[in-house]
Image (tube, rainbow, N blue to C red; front, top):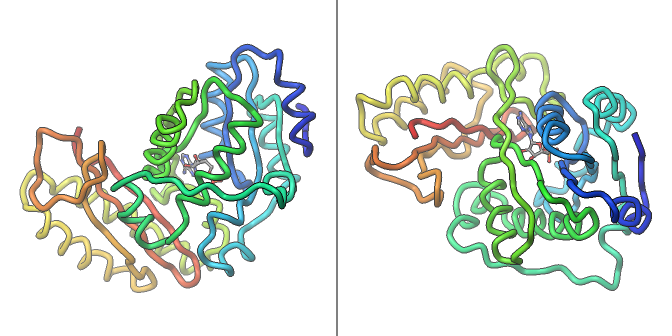
Length: 278
Ligand code: AMP
């Protein structure tokens, strides 16, 4: 496995490769990331993973400061997963002082849920993804459904810039108790970690009841159910159509509907989602 810090050296190395798969990450890797690497290894000639904690997508300074960094362990996991190339740039490598930030218009999909609760987050994420795409020039890029709205914004970015890149989604990988794997999970106290299973429990209970009630009744039930896990402070829980992330007040079974949740447990913010029906 080759490790690059320098973007020009990485671009030169990749320039004669034919089917490049790319998995952008912020490190502190877990099996969710590994699943994306394996998807790429199975489909591509060369798999590139980037590890870059992108300051531009953090709207909360403390979240950035506390974000876990476990580079040595990450490299071992990547090697075991069959990754070919790792890119670990410094901030100046991605954001040289002479390059200004782009302002994108992604329309309605960036104005709801994470877009509404984390101002500037998607614009910052899209800036780094565009720069990384420009350096790696992948044929395929892999993004997890755990960050479903991010996946939608990245697809929109590719359309907007007319890039020849196929965006491939990866299913959510969960712990044994259902908690979606996340780098931030390691910041939970043991009590918070135990109660964090309430996120998945609530999504699953709603899915199991989705044939019987209207959306507001289901959401009221969700809020009640979350009270069994008093350390969980819900930020939002809502249904949205999978294709445009539009909020819905009636469960329209002719369209794919998802349930999205964001919560805080102590200082840690976690998100999750579930397909309610296709
Ligand atoms: P991050 O390091 O959190 O920026 O995530 C890097 C990529 O891994 C993103 O495409 C995430 O959606 C994806 N990812 C993170 N957690 C999971 C998970 N539990 N299952 C599947 N993909 C994930």
